[in-house]
Length: 127
Image (cartoon, rainbow, N blue to C red; front, side, top):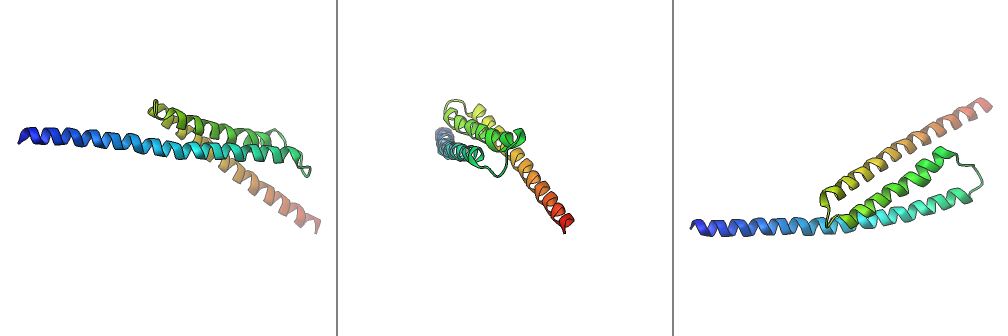
């Protein structure tokens, strides 16, 4: 009876491990596609920033709208490629990319609020 549990327990452990590897691979495909999609969108944003004439973007605008987001998405896509062979490092890459995107989102939200408040104050002063 002891051998039965030993064999079944080992097989169950192997199947759970295999399931974990398979699930990580499918998740890696999803975050790889997200990285490629974000990189494509980042290229479109940079192109639109270059072509628009209503405002001359400064270094901060280029950094937080044109350079850092595509960089984070490249890291995300490369992490997906590295996931099957270097899972731990790939997950650190995903974490770093997400942290960078979070930082960019906070900065851009703050920048938008500051712009809207300054615009509203200048309109109130003109009245």
